[in-house]
Image 1 (cartoon, one colour):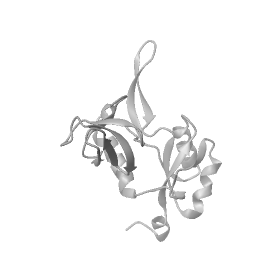
Image 2: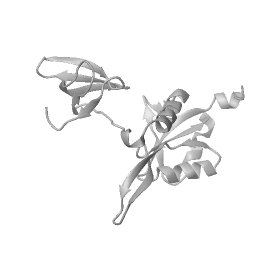
Image 3: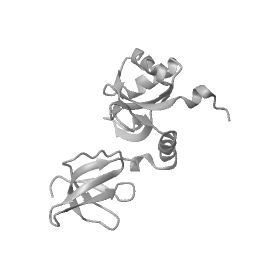
Length: 173
């Protein structure tokens, strides 16, 4: 209703930033008039003399920027931006619904219980909940939120949805 044609052409892109520059990049891009989202989680840190609550990026070295295709080069004016994250040869686009889900997650849940876990082929993991609880395997492939586990003892592979099953990395199988 309030969206113009120009607003509909804007997409959320993922930016890769220099280490510990996420908040600085977000602030600078906002100063340029761009719509930026750098999800932050509150974390308790111990200083030498006290405990202190700090806001840390949920995704280290990443932030999101919403802009049109023609505005994409504007992000490079901000020190700290390395590049866009690419997927299949094109800048990765995040759906509006996914950005909203991250905002809901950070708004509705205790930040100490939120952990971002990235899985890669070769990682050794154990399923910690669901029908496959206590199954250990090695990741063969990933597709979005699903991981393909090779179950050595059974000689087969299975797909596990990490949104429906808690999965944790382990050092050995």
